Image (cartoon, rainbow, N blue to C red; front, top):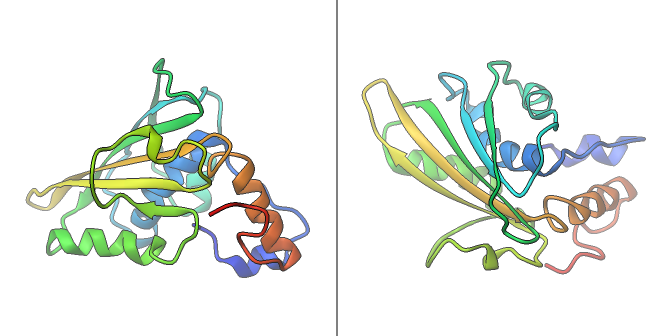
Length: 180
């Protein structure tokens, strides 16, 4: 969902990030593209293991300011969760931040905005999509944005992501073979 489909269609090979890097890209991709990050974000991950090249994937999107990542021991079954806290340039209003994410993911099959009800791993367990939720605290020149994001290890954080990339490379419909 971060990359434009056209280069993938023409590619001979594509790499997909691991679970933690996938969630980091979902949470930070729109902010990086908009140039809103002020300093290195902080990310707490549960359900994934250390060792992924999160900074490498973020740098491919244009962010070279690093990220502080900690891994929790919580067990959410097949679901990987992340809470990302980022210091961002203060937008005109809260709606501008929501719109930034909607512009990035509003037409996506595999990244969806959480719009109502409780935040629970059952919302994504066994499904191919990731879910995100924004919480915003306004400040003067900079503000705090917390992005919660979660996905199933066999969904957006795994096999469904690989099949999606293969579908794009082969010119198939994005959701072929993946139940949406």
